Structures are given as structure tokens and as C-alpha cells.
Length: 332
Length: 178
Image 1 (cartoon, rainbow over the protein chains, first blue to last red):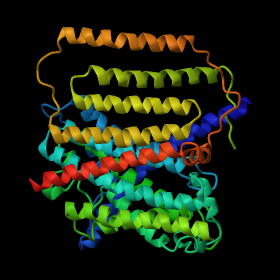
Image 2 (cartoon, one colour):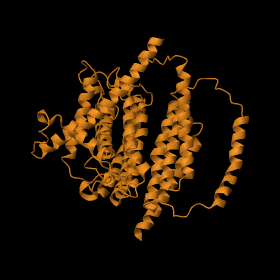
Image 3 (cartoon, rainbow over the protein chains, first blue to last red):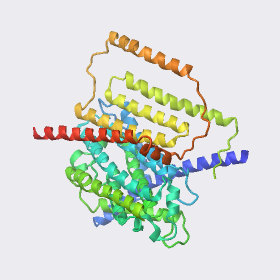
Image 4 (cartoon, rainbow over the protein chains, first blue to last red):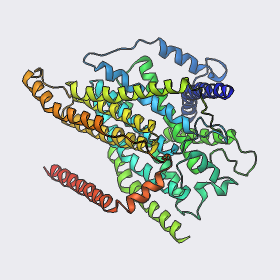
């Protein structure tokens, strides 16, 4: 009994450190990938000076951010001002607890894992909203108002798509959803046309919603450098801005993890050979790369078009998707 | 798989600590809601209080209710209130006048009977432990109850939501014409 207790403590510590390291690694090296990627898209080289191929650049960036002075502008609501970055980052890290990286690698095999991810994702909007308001800055206020309109508009189709998937899987447990997709790539939810012919469309819509929910270009209304200075983050400097930045990348990784689990078979191998965490990471980083790819390929959409896309296309189609799934479940 | 066999000494301590933190969050958030003069801080307090309450639900072995509490109260209610505040006045500051003493006293007097009543009710009630251990996976039961026993209530709530959406549309429409 004592031995098991020690093991449990060791397990918890290991997972906490592991998840924090994973989040930190992703935040720093996805930024590098983004900079390298954007450079290649624009026929440049990107960072090359620090280390071979600029591989140690993230360390230099981190040191710079940590050394920068944190400015607190006049008339700022100090408590809320500092609470906002924490509120944005913490829930994203918390959600990592339920993500199954492999058959036995999941910090907690939680029955309601999927629901937990979407419940805590709600804090994200609240955090940015508070940050934008507390900054006492016109640009930040405007950006915060836009973010709410955007995130509410895209949360609806996201949840509707997820509901359709859950109707098929019959469980919120992420580990079980992955287990159901064992066997080969034709068993993945994205290709289960026998369950719902619209499944690939649902995946595409989920991906669009993911871009909008994480405030990535072409939907980056929260920052919109060319119109709103730096949007909700205008008054944040040094590491407070760094935390927002980390949260953005953590949310992207989280969204890609959920997409991998829901549609791409999680840690299952496409050919039924050696399933394991390497497949999960491969799929997840492929999705992350696509997110970056999209950012440097498409211009920012107009705000009204953004809302129109959600309310006039995504929501009706996802509702139709639910009805179709229900029909298919009832008929077959 | 699960190895939650902790020594008997540590488990109650951690449990009590967790409970204290959650109750502190719930009550602290509620006090912030009432006492602060800035509306935005009130909303933040409400979010804190809701999160604490969700934690208490989790503590009582109903994770579904806890997650719903967060999803609905923090994700929808608080964000909507915040949004409304931002649309009405950008800074959300209350005018410089301090609160009048008589109002504070009157509010305390008005709240007192309710508080005393509730405390008496809690103290006098006979709390029985549930005969059966309620499982975490009550989602199917919940769904069935909503569509059978509480079907009428469920539908009525849908009608209320539909009406409020229609009302919002009407208001927005007339606003646009002006």
C-alpha cells in the first residue's frame, strides 16, 4: 500500500512536470516553426544566427521576454490586468490532463474528458475579454468586443459538430473514442462514411472553427496588427505578453490534439501496425503545421464576413450534420 | 489502473484542504460580487464563485454537473454580462459618490431574515447520506430523465429561449432601421 502511494505521487509529479514541459516546448518551438515557415513562404531564411539553423532562437527569445520590463499603464485595473494572462493559460494547461497521448499515456482517464476540454476552453474568452477591458485602451476594448462576438459565433458550430461525433461514439471518454477507431485509417471517424457521409465535411468545419476559436489568421481579430495596433494585447509587455503568446500556442496544440482524437484516430496507426504516441504526435504536429500554413497563405477576412461564415454557413451545415447523423443511426 | 490507495492520515487532510479552498473561492467570489464598486470586478467575482461551486460539485462526485456549471456560468453567463457592460459604458466605473450608510444598513437588514432562515433550515434539516453510491456516469440517466420525466419542462425552457432570441432579433432590427 505504501509502495502504491509513493508510485501514485511519483506519477502525478511526473505528469505535472511532463505536461508543463510539453506546453513550454510547444510554445517556444512552434513559434520558431512559425517564423521559419513564414520566412519560407515569403522566400526568406528566417532566424539563422542562434545555433544551427537558428534552433536555439526560442531560448534567446525567452530570455529577452523575461528581461523586459513589465509596464503598467495609468488607469489600469491592476488585479484584472494581471489575472487575464493567467486565466488564458491555466485552463489550457489543465485540459492537457485528459489528452490520451498513447494507450497508457494519459494523466487521467476521465469519463467526461471531451466535455472538460470544452468547458475550460470557455475561460479563454473570459480571460481575453478581461485583459482587453482592464487595459483601459480603446484598441484593446474594441478587440475584446470583437473577440467575444467571434468566439460565441464559432463556439456554437464547434459544439454542434462535436455533438454529432459524440452521437456516433456514444462516449465523452477520449481514450475510448480512440480505442473505437482501431484497425486502420478506414476506421477513423473522418472516413466513417457509413456512419455519416458528411464526416470529412465535419472535420473541415471543425478545423475552421479551431482556427477561429484560437484566434488564428485568417480570423485573428483579437490581434489584427494592421488595424488595432496589437488588439487586446496592446498594453501588455514583457512576460505578460509572453504568457498570452504561450496560451495561444497551447490552445492550438490542444485543439489539434482534440481533432486528432476525434477524427484522426488518436494514437492508432493508419495501417494497424505499431500504434503508439509517435502516431499521435505525427498527426497532431501535421495539423499544427497546417494551422501555420493557413496563416501565411490567406489574408485576414473582414469582420462581417467572419460572422457571416459562422451564422450563415457553418451553423446550418452543422445542424444538418446532426440531423443526418441521427437519421443514419436510426436507420442502420 | 487506478491507484488511489493513500495512507489514511493524508487523505482526510488533503480532502479537507481542498474543501476549504473551494468554499473559500465560492464565498470569496460572492463577497467580491457584492462589495466592489466596479461592475467588471463583480462579474469576475461571479466567475470565481461559479468556479468554486463547480469545484464543490466535483468534490461531491458529480463531474458532469461541475463541467456544465463552468460551461454555462463562466462560458456563457459571465461572458454575456461582460459583453453587455462593455457595450453600455466602456470603463464600467461607478460615479464617485460613496455608498450611503442608510442604504447599506437597509440592505443588511433586508438580507438578515433570509440568511437567518437559511441557516436555521440547514441546521435543523436531517442530512441523510445517500443509500446508494451515485456513479459518475449519470449522463445517460440525465438524458433519459430530460426527455421523459421532465419532458414538458425541457420543452418549455426551449420555448423561453426561442422567445428571447426572437425578442433580441426584433430589438436589433428596429435599432438598425434608425
